[in-house]
Image (cartoon, rainbow, N blue to C red; front, side, top):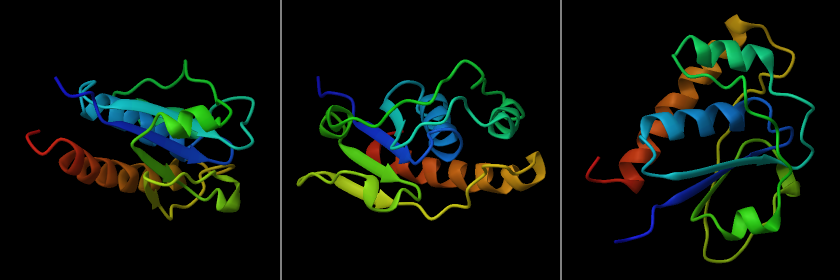
Length: 135
């Protein structure tokens, strides 16, 4: 049996965009894809507006905590998706890289976070279609 594809989502604080993307991928792929998320400078906690926006989708991120980006996490992932971390994300040959241009939900209210969440969901659905063609 082939190993599951693996995806790493990276943003600076690992508190909003990358957490929402990881939660969606875990949820929508029904565990068929290995999911990681990290930040180059992790925040103390996940953005409460992001947690609330995902709760509206039936996904609980309240227990998640921001994690520091490690070289090992990048090496262990087939796909690395960055979200506004600029030059702080390490690059390794042979990996598939994407940079998703998304507004930063930091300091935003739920009304501003919802469209970011919805765009992330659309991108995640496309990604699942690419990684799990039989899905």
